[in-house]
Each structure stands twice: as C-alpha cells, then as structure tokens.
Image 1 (cartoon, rainbow, N blue to C red):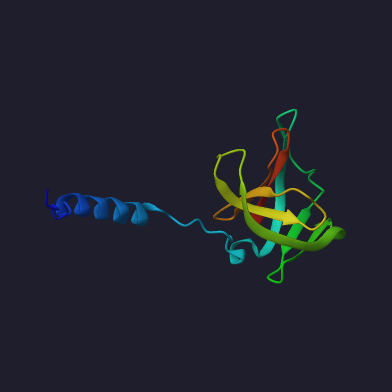
Image 2: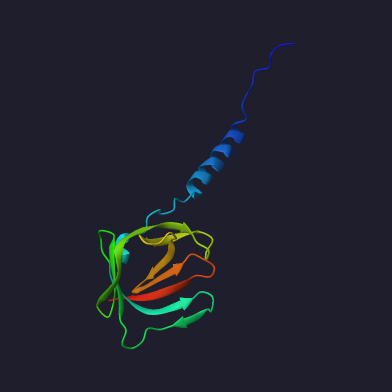
Length: 141
C-alpha cells in the first residue's frame, strides 16, 4: 500500500485560530495597583460599624477624626487635631470576601490584614476583609 499524503483540514484550523483569538481578546488584565491619586488627601470620618453587632455608629458632634493619605504612602490620623496613628500605607488588591473578586485594598503598616476599599466621588469606604470585621466611611475634606 502506498502512503496517503496528509492534508490538514483548513476549515478546522480556521476555527481553532478563531477560538484562540477570542480567548486571548476576552482575557482582561486586572489592575493590580489602585490609583494612589484617588486616595491622596484629607478624609473625615462620618460613620463606622458593622462587625458582630451590625450597627452603624456616628462620631460625637464634638469629635472630628481626620485621616490624611500622602502621595509618599504615609498617613496621619488625628482626632480633634491630636495624632492617634501615623506611618506607612500600601495599596494593592485582595480577594474580597464581599465580592469574591480581587478588589482594591489598603493596608496600614501596623496591620497584618488588608482592608477592602472603595472610593466613589467624595466618599471613601474602608472595610475589614473579615466576616466579623467592621468598616468606616469617610468624606473628602
């Protein structure tokens, strides 16, 4: 018996190429570093809570809590002008317990866990990435 020459099926090759091209185009790269320009500035605490009791609390009328994020990744937290915390912060992404996806995150140098953050217009939400964790809401000043 003689050898039968192999002829590739060009239609099948075209379909395979189209499928590979579609897969490559549909893959979306996640932004691994949130834009630090969005968080830089002064933010005033407006509410906090969640956690075990699920309640929302508001600062006392005579208590002003400000957190300032600087472009050099340092922060300063004050209550009525008195420093209560300062140091370095990091921005990144973490697998969120809220969305099940990689979300923007913030970590302070004195914490081991990342916090999920959301910035919408002039509102910053910082939420502990834990099932019994709470969160805080700030407005830009």
